[in-house]
Length: 356
Image (tube, rainbow, N blue to C red; front, top):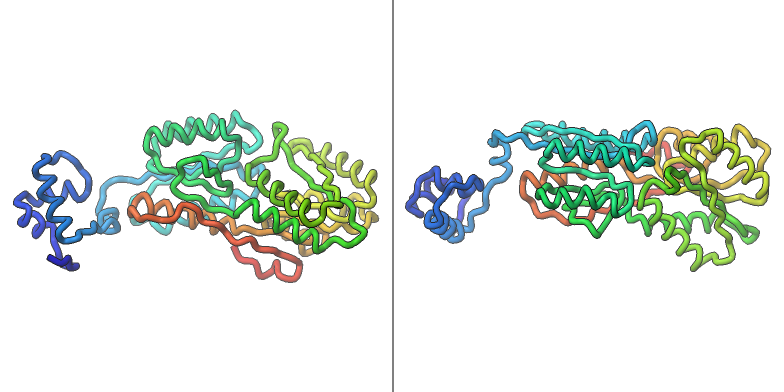
């Protein structure tokens, strides 16, 4: 028998010799069915190549699908506000499916903050989770292990950890993105360039994510292969010490007046650009490359105090990640795990056309 769009549960029940209610429970996984009835119904389903309509089932379901996300606070980095906007946009687009959504926010430079929010998330018993994984493997594994044990599916956003059992990842290929930044900075350099500065914004003695670490790996590998004679000078800035940042930058540029190129791998290039523009205006222009089209960075591109931004569409990341998790977990679609965002270069000439 060939399946047609007109096949009904009643037809399946008649062929299998069971009740309509039994077929309904089997198709929708509601249990309380004898092995004999299960075998009869499954035989008919196999004969007709039956595929359940998960879309219709989800609409008809009385269950509330509780989605949750754990991501960094906006106050520390405004980039995450756009990611959150994308996630909440996803909730609005699928509001016919009885979805609730709860966000847990942590300080990306404070591991204890992350641990507290992880426990709150687990206590909420979510249906599925979107994680922005900032910290080390050991810290993150405590969360993912418990999600795995509870069979709660989860997605990773922004930073990819292939070691985990996530259903979906959305973000850039960080190694390739770092290599791309190396190429751009190499094109901006000339034969007199012997040094470049790499600014890092630290908290608890580290950068905020594996993504930034992988970008640095990709950048250094490119530079070693193509410009081995250019020295990469690390400059560490501490996120909660604004005055200390200014003193470190002043000392660095005073002691290294020949520095003409600098970059950082998070959304903080505006800190360096604004400092040079306002506090060292007589210093020769430093070509600056940073990440993320947050408002402060875009303003620096427009006024010429920064030169390049690598953008990654955070709002689209959030929306597409939510949509993929909905399709995977609610509609039971089989989707690829890894989804890489475009590596997009912005300059003064095209930044006004950038749309997230």
